[in-house]
Image (cartoon, rainbow, N blue to C red; front, side, top):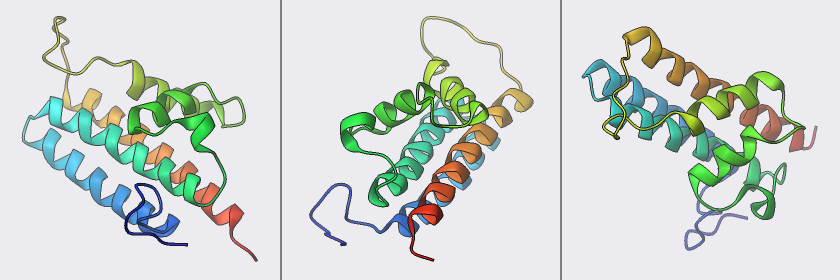
Length: 136
């Protein structure tokens, strides 16, 4: 079912998860170098990649979750079928303004780590959906 020309099916579900995990490592590196805007953008991208995996697996649909990574994260934040902790993680990523906006937000490394942990929760949830969709 892999199609290198299709935006979603260019990777398998498990490949999307692997790429999402690599993206989480990039987010950690961005935060470690005090690039908070890059860290947040990378967390959102990683979460969206995880949701792409669930879409490839057929656990969620493009009609419901949209096409962009942010569409995915916002949709997950409102998906009543997802666990509350996962919806809360998605809300954190979706509703927190990117650093450098008009508001000045005071953040610490603990705050930054919350975004990374939220992303991990979303990717783990997506992986669980992928595993549930695979034949036994």
